[in-house]
Amino acid sequence: MHAKRALLVLDMQVGLFHGPEQPWQGEQVLNRVNTLIAAAHAAHAPVFAVRHTGPEGSPIAAGSPAWQLLPALAVDPARDIVFDKARPSAFFATSLADQLREAAIDELVIVGLKTQYCVDTNCRVARELGFNVVLVSDAHTCMDTPGLPAEAIIAHHNLTLGGAFTSLQSTADVQF
Image (cartoon, rainbow, N blue to C red; front, top):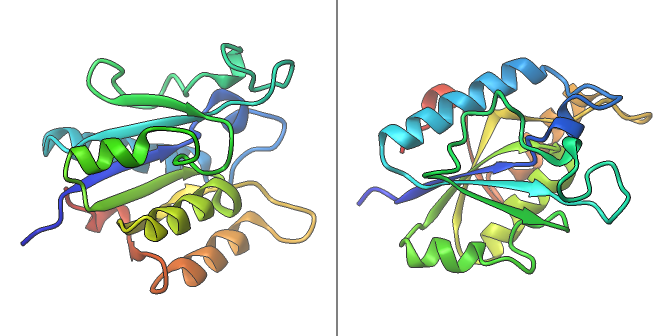
């Protein structure tokens, strides 16, 4: 039997994408995420898009311009589920796990920002909660850090998360 999948799009927000530091291969990743959203829509698979919400006064405080999802992101608020989180985990203090279970989703396809924070956290937490996880190896990104370039962070996380916590698939190989 084929697993019932949903797409989880993490933190594809104006302030994170167009902030002072640019995500590695940002436009390519955005295009791949949009390809996956279109594939999920075509298959009638649920799409969950989450915004990270900073505290009041922060650049990504709720309602601020930087907090908004990217205008170029193909999320359709009329059909997709858009929600907010205040921690790296999209499961913490949200109804995400309940919504996935109610929809009989057993596999979560994860994409978005930032690899070493929210992408990593959600891969691990989803697995701990009993969901199978597909990390789309070419559809998550981050920024360079003083210690490592973004490309190395992404490669490291693909290797670390792949197998133990997730299955790795490229955008071209994901099916809903």
